[in-house]
Amino acid sequence: MAHFAQLDENNIVQQVIVVADENCGGGEYPSSETPGQEFIAGLGLAGVWRQTSYNNNFRKRYAGIGYSYDEVNDVFISPRPFPSWNLNSEFEWEAPIAMPTEGGPWAWNEEAGNWEEFPMPPAE
Figure (cartoon, rainbow, N blue to C red):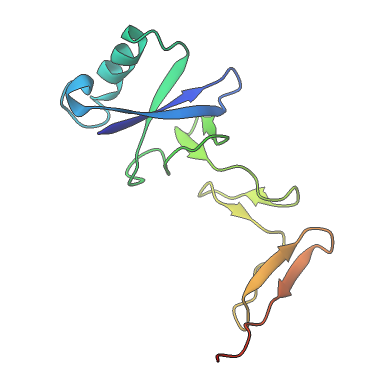
């Protein structure tokens, strides 16, 4: 099965559908993308469609609704989790302060601009 993400005019994923391999030329990405797009168009589904990998084998990650598609780098990018976070060179969101490596679990507090520890309750 192949998966295709529909993009809006801002390259934001609107939906993801499954297309049978035989409707994608029976091949694997990238040769499967064009036949899959043609099949989708033949169904009357308008818009721009990009193939996405359920196993993250290409385009960095599996596309989800609300993800963006970076056409220059040919990757899907998850939504920014917090306004203060920045996208790194691996297309992953990073907090402005690295998460502590000891203790935890940790949660980002956007208002305070830091990580807060939420200790686990004692085992019963």
